[in-house]
Amino acid sequence: MSKQPKTISFSIDPTHPGCVPGTLQLLDYVSDTVIYPDAAEIVMYMKTVAYVLSNSYHLHECFPCPLCPAIFAYATAQYSDGEWMWFGHTIHYVEHHHVLLPEEFVQRVRELNYRPRPTRREYVENARALQEKRHPPAE
Image (cartoon, rainbow, N blue to C red; front, side, top):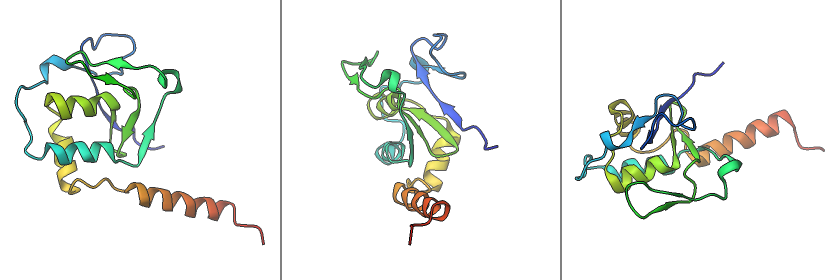
């Protein structure tokens, strides 16, 4: 059985029944100033991980950001690097509202030089190789 990823999740109301366990109070983590000098690289990492899931229930719904006029198109999309999991709206909070992230996550991103492992290309290549191994082409 694989290990469950640690979750990074923020909400105005973390007690809402739709929130995942461990959801943090958003307003406690927002900053008026940039927290990370490498924030752009951290955000790019968060956007480019290989594993992305989307809940079709919310696929066509748009959610307003509680902090600005932005509308989240894929707020409930789940991103994961295998060790951590976060939602689409978390990326917006980091990019536009300077949200403080778990230090362990930030250290991991920096240690990986802002490049998710495996990369999307590596993930696709590995998936294709596995598929071909399981179902060899007909001769």
